[in-house]
Length: 635
Image (tube, rainbow, N blue to C red; front, side):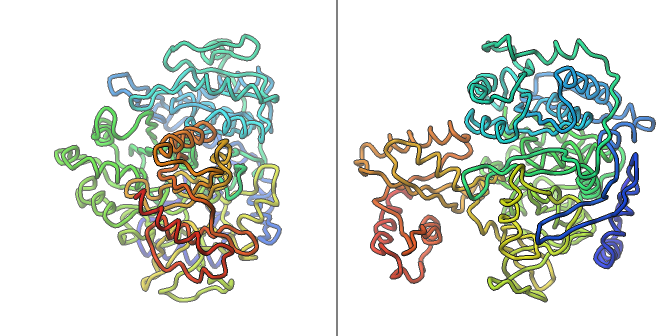
């Protein structure tokens, strides 16, 4: 098992050691895992290419480190607890032995469908146990899984399947989320009309609802599982073989397929999970994220299971059937570590304290937040009402591309400060850069957050587009990984994340590219162009504000109808989470003389801020005042 830091002096010692000798530091941690063949070189890297390779030529299988590594000691320990959407429906609990058997059986199902090492498997499932089983089964046989969030539209699903050239899709008849029934099979059927690489569609029976059936491609999960045994050897993988692709929105319309590889990701997620949350054997850990996002990959599945933890997977929402659902789950399972988003916390604050004031939750030891910076008001409410003033909060900063937590308190060891991610974890070397590309030394500085040395969990590329990977993270500050976030380092050396600096909006912890939303808006026949920016939102952290140019501006009575039509189109093309919160119609958009839309000005207008800078250099400075006046009418 990976070593656990237990004191502040221990953290300082590990951090200094990791900076002085990073390869030796990570090699010692990697030694705690099972390798079929030890690596030849710990690290080969060059951020200018960029190229990063950890534990070169090491051979392993990540599922052997989840199952075979633990099975003789804790085979009968609970590995996965599934809590359904409806609390009156029975839950499902798997021991490590039981989960291992399911994973091996489905690995054999995939092999029967001619899936082999390196093939891509698309997974479009709700939060059901089969999602975890499918991911681990892919890893068992060396297939590359691509989990696609079950809230995405048919268009978004099709785009991601085709980019990965997936050979098989795994979906469900329907999904349940709160009071909603989500017709996943129907959406999948629509997507598969234009997915020529898909040979089979394996369908999980979740609700038993009526669905269309294609005898040429569709098969039932349970029927396929009945045809196989649970004897399944693990494929030998190279440390740098891809483990999964996870698509995330970027600053262009096309989603980015972020690629994480096997060895480094394994080492990093296990190490960060155990240390940040101070997990101890026998603890019950609950991350309330969706596995369609990186948090679910790293801190529901891989990180916890690699450390032999008991991890809870929750299908529902924090407010169904009432706003005490999280607290009920914590009490039901005696949860020790709880990890959720600031958006969820803010939504619960807005519903009143009566849902939590009589709930003790005495089992809780650690609270965590993820997905976006947490504001001070929400931090204090979380600390006072959920943690009862006794649980440290780990305000974690990291990204899809980092694979795991980068800057965070270590629970109970690094003193916390509201709204600060505090200090980097051992092995992480953050720097703050000014606009000229100079590294800002000392404390009390603010600028662009970069990382100057690789860590094992770093993404290796974008699927089939390494040039875009380079341009996204390594071109603005050559020789550094640019996170895209602004940050300040205060007088104590603590880091506070200030939010995105690029064309990405963080809505309730979900990163959405402005270009992707604009493309969807521009598909509307009455729209000639649009510009999308983020603005501060009390619940979601950031909301979506769309400035829409029409050939003929709608009359007052028609404006709401057009807004509804546009938002429906965005929902259909991307997802309901991408719907604009506000839409303002305008004759045109402010542009520089080179034709660039001045989103900086639009963002300030959306947030109600003045000081737009010198607008005389715009080709159409008069439009700024028109947009300001229009903004006042829709507040």
